[in-house]
Amino acid sequence: MGRILLVLTVGIVLLGAVSAWANDLYVDPMGTGGAYTSIQAAIGDAVDGDTIHVAAGTYNEDVRIDKSLTLVSVDGKDTTIINGQNTGGGGALTVAGGLSGVVIGGTGTGFTINAAGGTA
Picture 1: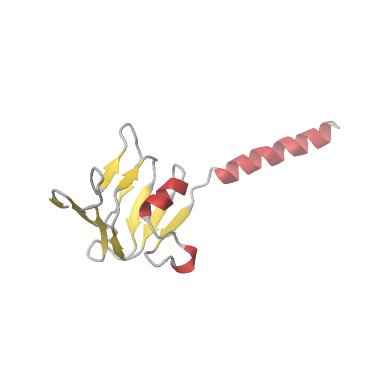
Picture 2 (picture 1 turned 120 degrees about the horizontal axis):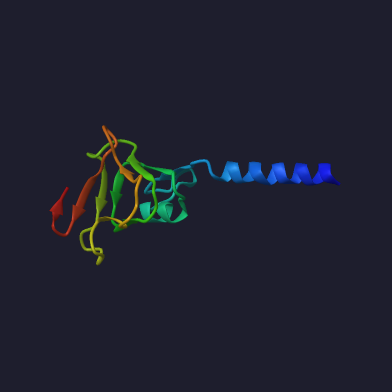
């Protein structure tokens, strides 16, 4: 009985460790290969530590990041655009206060961000 309990305990601990690993999520405006079609939908399903890879395209949405994650474009800022103009939201890209570990873009993996006030 003690051996069965030990095996079950180890199994539960290992399952917890597997779910703690970071995942890669993909966004593509056409949903190619089962990818998300919006950045916000991917953020909604992401957990802390995940990386969201965004394919080239124009994403007409307001993006709110409320988790510690990495958001990168696949093809760079010239072809990957977050367009928050005329969406009725507060801005094209918002990061919730109090978060640490949020990374947006990087060398060659950035975004063009259009908001009501201009372009960043």
